[in-house]
Every structure is written in structure tokens, then in C-alpha cells.
Length: 180
Image 1: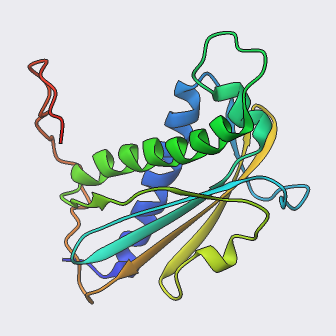
Image 2 (image 1 turned 180 degrees about the vertical axis):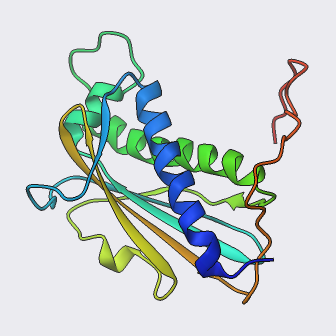
């Protein structure tokens, strides 16, 4: 059992690695940067959370429409309806949290994922929970600035988190899929 302050740096690493893996898998160049050269205000924001009885994570990702259009999963589409891109940013946040959940499981930290929401014409601050440990991360995705926030709220003074990764059995290794 560890304190939330001992766990949070590991969560930050899992978060960064998951985000880079997600966008690299969408054929994008991803570079983490210390700061952005401009404030992002017009771009949509996706918010999603996950949690357990011990802790909760909330993530926000602000992604420009150009990156959403670039990564949209449709072959050679010239024009994409803006409402489809609104759905796509929510799906990106869902995929990101799925990658995070898989990595957390390797640290014996099991969480349940909530539903994503998309927001427009707003700042990130009111969308984050009060309290908790928070970190902001900035990325250039195909040279377009993206902003993300990660918040971890702990409900206990000590939480279950194995610092060493453990091997997890793949529940779908035999080729079957579960629908629920």
C-alpha cells in the first residue's frame, strides 16, 4: 500500500506513454513539449473518468479539429461533418482511458471507466474536480498543439498499487470476445 503522492508519478508516466501510444497508432508524430506557444481556447475538450473504491482519475484532452480530422477513421474522406468530429474526440478519450486501464491492471490497480463528454468554447479548469493531484501535459501532434490535464483523487491515505508491472492474462487470448 502506497500514499497517493507516491503513486501519482507512476500514473503520470502511464498517462504520457498511453497518449503517445494512442496517437502514434493513429499514424501521427507525437512530441511532448514543456509549454505551448499559444493558448488553446477554440478547440474542443473531451472529459472522461475512471475509478475504484480507492481512487478516481479524470482526464481532459483538448485537440484541434485539424488533428481530429487527420485521425478520423474513414478512408480518404474529403469532408467530415463537424458532429462526427465531436463524437470522435469522445472516442479518442475513451480509447486513451482504455490504454491507461490496461496499464493500470499490470500494477494491480483495477478501475471502471465512465462515459466521455465533449465540451466546446470553455476552459478546462471548471471541468476538473476540486482537489486531488493534478498535472498538465502539452503535446505537438503532427505539429499541432494539444493540451491535456490529469487529476487523481484518492479516497484513502494508502492505496493498492504495485510499482512493478505484473503479467496479466489476456482474457481474449483465445480469440473470443465478450460483449456486455
